[in-house]
Image (tube, rainbow over all chains, first blue to last red; front, side, top):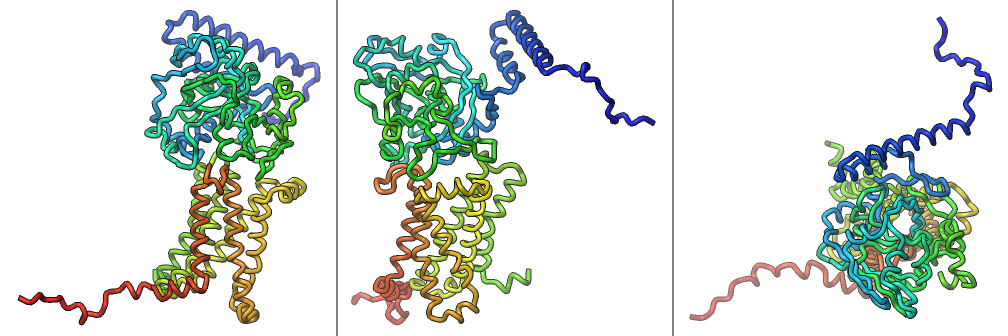
Length: 317
Length: 226
């Protein structure tokens, strides 16, 4: 009897080259997208959303531009630094599940010509949603890769027409201690506030995110709308925003108020400048056991390093 | 169940409590319900359990002073050795799992970060205490044994510093993640203050005995004259 598992010699001419099978995969993918969009076009409007979501699930594994695979939906929604709910990252998901995210408005004002209050659903209609797969590097030296859905912060700012006096953007989280138990803690100057310099805010990488993995954002991730500034430590990416204010003065930021010498205004990811009490040279990607070297500007130097030309980054940490 | 009768309820409670952290970790690891960031969680849980056991060992003497209950004095050794066990696991996880024995990276961190320096000093000082915790050493060292074991008065504050410095916050201005470390710090401070001779004497004289009801004969209800 012949062994069915015996290897048979294959002539090298019979082996499909990598180039060919990759292009075949591309063809299959493209065909899938085309077929999918044809199916979508035929669908009734209310069916579109669910089809799109399932298409996302079935798609190829998501990776960032450096090829790092995205963390799972499960990890991203169950490991959250959101002190308004709890300092225990794995307790936030359950503590925030009943958080009211609708109706929700964001007041955009300050030094602008056209101050306006937007409902979150208005923002979704005004600006096309893009998927951005970003690395998120926490100041505590862990990191994730997250596929956000959102739109550039710059689009919103342009709409309200900042005046020439506007130099900074200040963001504020909702203050709702009855739903956010952590806001009862006397050890923090609630509500959470954050800020960006105008040119940082206008950089295309800075987005306001309303979704993740193609799904509406969950409360533990900062629903219904949050900032994502991927080249800065995670605490800059303020969650559940209710107020955006353009100012002439540099705004206070919560962590800077808590510990001025530890959490600077800029908070750019910088492996060369340590936190006073721990190193920032390496990080642990959630889902991996060994440490990885951290990258300057979290790997986004090409897009943002010029914003800080001539600045001493160890002083402006 | 007969073997249990050889142990006092306090002994059983201490052993159960001491092992509970490890048993819980192993249970969660086996059922796949352990943390999404497992190494950090292992570090934090073993560290917190070590410092809790250390605080409990410091509580024994004040309990004796105030309540004149002497059994806790005999349990200090058990609590101290469990402290050493968890501190050792904590250090091994940090060096091996976390840093993968990358000594150059570790040494650089150690030199630069006071948090790690105080942690390492606290752990190093625990080693001679663990080694000399047996009766034979107690006899051999005589008077010096007690002196040596007073090192715990230094170890506890160092462990506290190591803990509070691993949190995002500022203890002096009471801002940030300071609530839990603060509780440990206050307990350590109180238990150490209770050992200061003058306070200890005051506590001993104001012991629970004084709070007991006076003898019965004085308790005759006074009857008002008609």
